Image 1 (cartoon, rainbow, N blue to C red):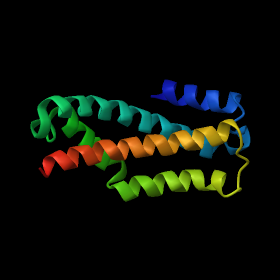
Image 2: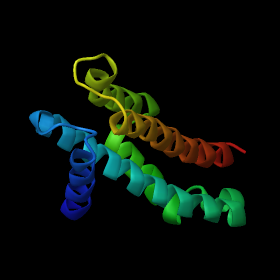
Image 3: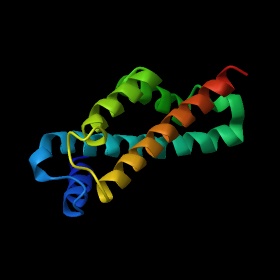
Length: 129
């Protein structure tokens, strides 16, 4: 995990997306991006199982693992949303400089968050069928 975190942070700092002056916040943001990417990859594998096995896949295997990890990390969709908003608010509200590559990173975070929630919605939809 440290390797992915540092790679992501280094790329962001080197691209000028984030300044070293905000290293702690940037590290937290990089860690959140890394977590979202891992959850998206797991969600994609779950989605593949759901497409094949339908409702039967929603509670066990990779989909069960996805739901457990999601709830362990964020407890709820609103918990994920709040955590992301807390991390990106300083960049969006002008508290920290953010243009060019930084703005692209913020868009990507929103995309990842939406994708993570989509997979959870897909699991819940099939469970409720």
